[in-house]
Length: 289
Image 1 (cartoon, rainbow, N blue to C red):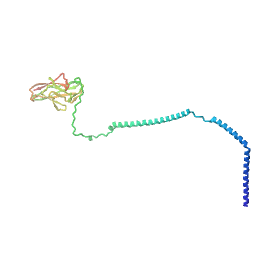
Image 2 (cartoon, rainbow, N blue to C red):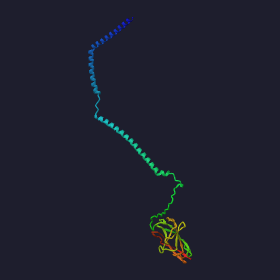
Image 3 (cartoon, one colour):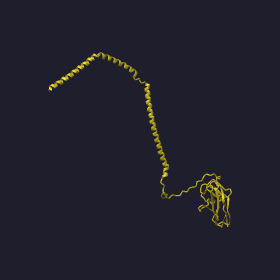
Image 4 (cartoon, helix red, strand yellow):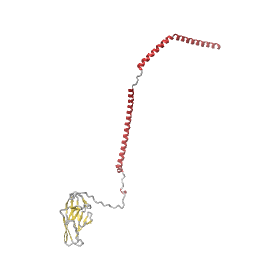
């Protein structure tokens, strides 16, 4: 039974192979029969292909690029690069300017603090912590004297002449004169160009009984050379009043008492180193009784 089935299978396979062989022979015969037709079709197709390629070459072949177009493209690319570079430089320049401006503002603030801030915000020194300088000698300063014209800038108005002095032999008394400074120059008691009373008739005559000048604090100062009387005030500005007060003592050069009688003393205003200002001298009398 098995051998029978195997034989049938071989017969079926042989039939299939024979059928395939027959089919191949039929196709080959047909191809041989159709060979002239294939050659004709191939020739036609070849001709058509040549014509089509020629037409396509004429219509669709790429045109050569002119040198001018290439240069224009290159120039355009260069222009774009330049524009981008310019924009970049502008941005960088703006940042640079901003940086410089910021540094300037910081520097100005620093200077402002150095010049103003330190003094404004400095901690004040308490009064009890102020350093004391020991063994410091007082410095005597001469008053400043302005350069006024002599005698044009010097003028005065007599306010009070005072009276004569009446005393016993060897006694004391006081003469007094008050004048207002009506000029433009300031008068100084102790200066190179001091404003004083001086003896006249004759000028700068020394008078034995002219003892001393009285100062504003009540102290006395010996009369300079027995012929100069100083102001009580240290200085008198225009519009202010100067007072001359001179003490006299009824004694002679040797200190002996003066004999009874009237002894005149004539004085006038002057500026030391410049000259006399008095056209109308003032005369007092020392009456010894």
